[in-house]
Length: 292
Length: 312
Image (cartoon, rainbow over all chains, first blue to last red; front, side, top):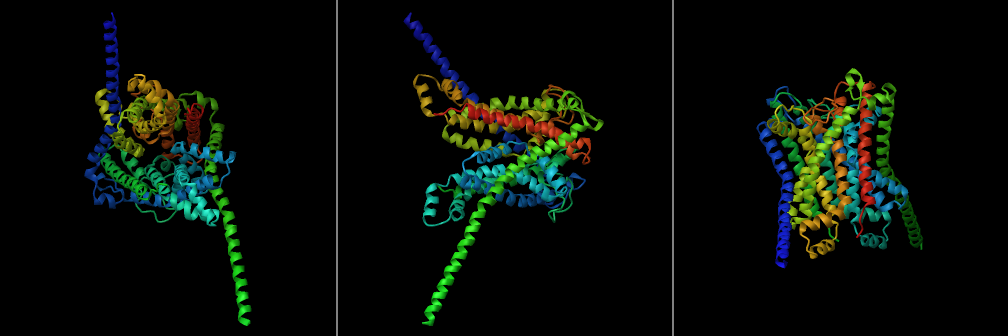
């Protein structure tokens, strides 16, 4: 009788252990699905696009034939877009973070700004496009121009930069601030010479990651009127422009299959630039990170 | 004698200069918080601006198209004057359902594996790679859905259209896996080890510990991450624009071509829509609908985190 019970218990324990082992592999497989998907995606893009990727592709403007189509307008459009977006978004973002972390009183208004920033980060990017369309394109009369696109993008990535900067500023230990104040420095002197330099790595990493998000954004730019075929590099703030993802999108939606290869080539360029930006962000974080 | 008065004068001058410098510094010092506050207010103005544009243009839209038609009719064909948003909402829901059906099991299982089973080394390798998946532009996902996933699905399901909800939904799901995985893993990591050790010491297997102790304790974070994932799937634009088609359809058949709220906004903004036309205003009414859905989801997720947070 007793031995029967032990046997059944042993059996049950064995079952539980096997289940544990089996599900462990199931979880691993589920985790690998994401990674396999990534590998397939990269493989697919490379095999589709590599044939069309060449110096000509990087240095020529769009063309009606897939063999002659180039990416120059898209690349330069994105570069100029980012050159405008970065300073606007970073200055506004860091200022907001400094206000919230260093100056703001702990009251309702501050909490409201904080919650507001959090909620803005969750607004779909295309809604920012609608905001830009009403305000920058029509109300301020900028039209479908580079500056309207850049301002829209700045507002889009602002919440990300604010949150990253806040974290960086918060991680500067109070001892440093107190030491600086103790030496007679004013509040702003402390911030400018102590707090900001110490939080630069965090701010920079967050900003680069935010910009790498902006550089791949398509939907808001479509709404604020980035053009698909542009035969020039933007020469003023009020120039018409295109951007890499816009150009890629315009190639993807063409019915002839050859354009898919051109789109693939464009995607390779975009992914390489993104990879480079992410590598720089990681490098900055590792190189300049202080530990207090 | 003379030189000493000169000296006294120059000292006085220096003191004065110093005072002036201090005054200048004081004024700049007092201006800086104001400048920073203005920057902070810009983020509030952005929200106000979003509310204002969506509301104002939607109100104009509703003077031309009745509320009842917009919300009760299922026929969406703006170029012939039919504005029934239900078919766009159905398209969005269909994509979201498929996406969550893909992302919830994969994201949750990844989180369990990374937080409970993986060795620190495996975790250090897998986590950043998953984050790469989150950083890929959605236009690239759209390309992949259209040129890779759809052909594969077509060979499995004969008669599947080139543009279909299934392919787009699956890829949207893959896109939000890293988000659900990473947020859920954070929630599980926050569960203190003493709870796990207690369960293991009582003879529970790792699996039982995970599902009877860790997951219940981290449930609020896990649910919040899924709600955020839903919000992301509702707002996703490029994948559905490229791969799901542009045929507004009140259907829950994933094999059909559909149109979502977001992909109509793209279509309306790229077509030859003139400023001030009914179609122009309809973009905003659709945008408002989209905004309300995602905003509600975001608030819900924040509420869940706040309300059900476990403190240890």
